[in-house]
Image (tube, rainbow, N blue to C red):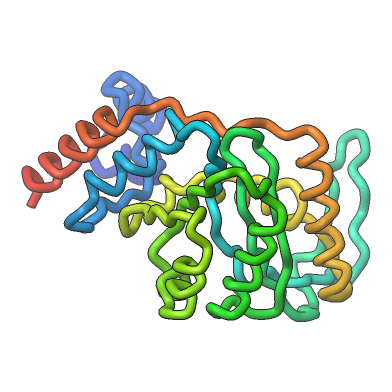
Length: 249
């Protein structure tokens, strides 16, 4: 928002506009994104997933599984300059592309460790290969509860057939348009922020090595995933949001 332009329109100074906004608790320069799920089973799915986070079953592992697709191996067109006193680190705004990779990852809610595998594509074939990796990694005496989103690959007939052959696995799907309910998304954001955004990668192999190194470092000092808000509290918030939208429209 332009304080000067707003002030001129009504004949007051920009500082007066700023004081009025502050006095009313308004921040018109900020916009927060949101989307309410239209999933007809929203409440049931939410309670199921949040229940796994807050009170996981005994003698079981709860995994949040998803894929981060199209991670680009980006190389800058010129070398950057390191940070020093009085100057931040620099890097060119343009880059060279050296291909992409897809990271399949499973976050263990209780331990905070991640099982990860980079693959070239993200079809049901690769997803089944990753499930086989998870099957080998998780102790054989543990039941496995998997939280997933509604991506078609996760519901492919061959994936369902795999699930029938592996009876200790149970899939739990988040409500549609609810990536915030998927624990692994927060870990993906951390990977992007801490390793990928400022990374310089001259090949896919170099990019995959960096991702694998990040996973190894994170697993060396894992932090359990902690969900604090109850399903009832979330449902109450969503209900207020729907009422606000209805009042506007």
